[in-house]
Image (cartoon, rainbow over all chains, first blue to last red; front, side):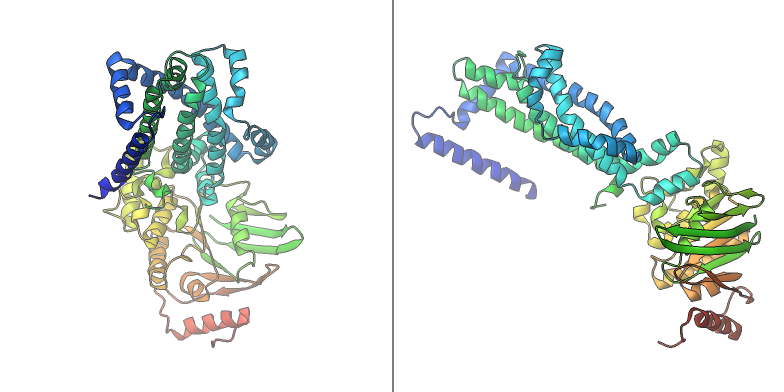
Length: 249
Length: 244
């Protein structure tokens, strides 16, 4: 029964949506049924799967590349205070610049296409991941690092056996939030002249004859997949060797 | 292994925390460093552990000066020192990464039962009580067979009943394993119950006030007149009347 409570919220929203659209004749906003029909249409044309896969593909690679750079960098800066002090102003300067501001640069460096889109996702993910890794490293119990050194670990062993496991619970929270950001950016990233993906679907549906039902269908898909990705990441937090890091135990 | 503090002085900023401390601890001896909060006793232990460099003086262990942390001398913190992401047996095996698999397994088994954690090998620290976590940390330290154990107020976070049990456990383990132990505490009773000698430090700057030999045989009876006399002597030394 308790599992149904969140669904009643959605049901109420759809009902209100339906009624409001029905009461305003001539509106361009599609009714829920039309959006549903648009989803079916996309599925029948085989575009639904294709676009979802295309968007997930770009997000996956952009995000993984960011993880690959951000975690080592964050660990290094987290452990090496002077390095962090030197690097921190750059991080702070880059932070307020929306990833979208990089679109011209992305096109300049990578042309129009997949690579540019992935680069934008990479950029959008990079800073939040670096900062959350640094914070996680700063949060390590001093006693754990001291114990690691006491048992004669080399620097690499200390990173592998103490630093990484110690930051993992917090890092995974950072990874989860960042994946949300990456997914948020995919729409904008796909507005630069790629010809597939959910972001493309939305721009294309409007350009090609104001198909607002398709626009809304795209929005629904983005929302649903975003929730799915979040739930997937949350599963990681249940691992027995990570549970200590979350308040609920 | 013999531990020798030679003229240790230390300042933090402009505050002198340790003033010319010299002390010699014999092999296999159990010594308590006793003093009020902020007397520098933890700093002294951290210097012996190689985590902090003294401003003047040196600590020698056996024939070598201490230059940094070393697995032959293990530092035991309060219970939070165990690694929460490892199980009981993984924690105990933590320092045994250079041993063979078989050696590792037999040592883990030995120390699991020595500290009374049998049946909890696969448990994570969050599933253990405070006292069990503390015993786990002692087991992790002993597993690497160190010459010296440094304990920094290890039972400070435990309730008073568990604390008494832990003292008994520690004495039993000390007698079984014959390690040199340096134990920091601000609890006078604790020091008299545990130590061969109690080193009384004064507050700010930490100076060596007095060394009291506790010549009461184990197991120590708290109502033994000698025990009470020694305890009162330390109470007076610290400047407290034994009345509340």
